[in-house]
Length: 176
Length: 162
Image (cartoon, rainbow over all chains, first blue to last red; front, top):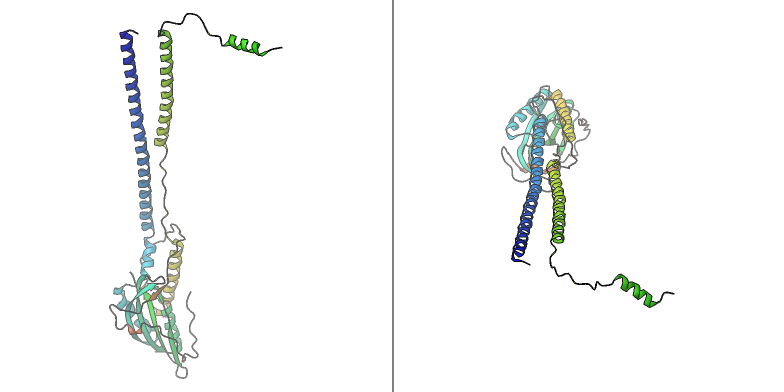
C-alpha cells in the first residue's frame, strides 16, 4: 500500500465520519424540533380550548342575562326590605286586615351540608281581620314573588265575631 | 451402492481448495470501488427513506387539525325556566291579590333564551341559623318556628298557589 493510497483512505474515512456526524446532528435537531412541535400543538390545543370556553361563557353570560336578572329579582336585597314591608302593609290595608310586624331581622343560614348559605330575611307578622280577608292575606304571603318559606303559622278564630288572627313568619332568601 | 468414501469424495470435490498460486495483491481497486459505491448507495437510499418518513410524519403533524377538547359550561336552563315560570305565576297571583303591580320580582321584560342543559345537582334547601342578627334587626329571639296552635279550629286555609 503506497503512501498516497493510505492518505486517500484516511481522508475518505474522515470524510465519512464527518458526513455521518453531520447527518446525525441534523436528525437530532429535527427530532428535537419535532418534540417542540408536539408541545406547541398541545399548548395551542389548550389555548384554543380555553378560548372556546371563554367564548362559550361570554355567550352564555350574554344570552342568559335576562333570565339571570329575573332570577336575581327573586331574592330580596337589604335595601328593598323597607319597600317590601311597605308593600305588605299597603296590601294589608287594601285587603282589610290589620297588620303588625313582630319581627324583622336578617338571619344567617346554612345549607344541609352545613355550609354558609345566603342570609334569610325573617319577617314575623301578626294580622287579623275577617275570614275572607285573612285567607286572602295568607294567600298573598304564600305568593310573595321571592324565594321564601312560611315555616309555621298559627290561626285563631272567633267565628261568631268573624275575627281571625294569624301569627306567622316569612323567611325570604336574601341576595348574597 | 454409495459408500461413505464416495460421499466424502463428492464433498471434497465440491469444497476443494484452490491449490494454485495465492493472490499477492492486497487491494483490488475495482472491487473496492464497487463495494464503496454499493455501501454509499445503500446509505443514501436508507437516508432517503428515513427522510421521507420523517418529512411525512411532521408534515402530517403540521397539517392535522389541532384536537380541541371543549368543556360544556354548566347552565341549568331547564331549572331556570322552571323557576322563572313558578315565580312569575306567584307574582301574578300576588299582584292580583294585592291589587297593585308589585315592585318585587320584576325586571325589564326581555325575551328569554334557552342555551344549554346540565344535570349537575345544586343544593337548594337552606336552614336558618338562629344566631346573630344584622340590620335591620329588631330581635333574634323570635327566630324559632311558630307552632300552629290548637286554637286554630275551623281554620280552612286557602290552597297554596302552584
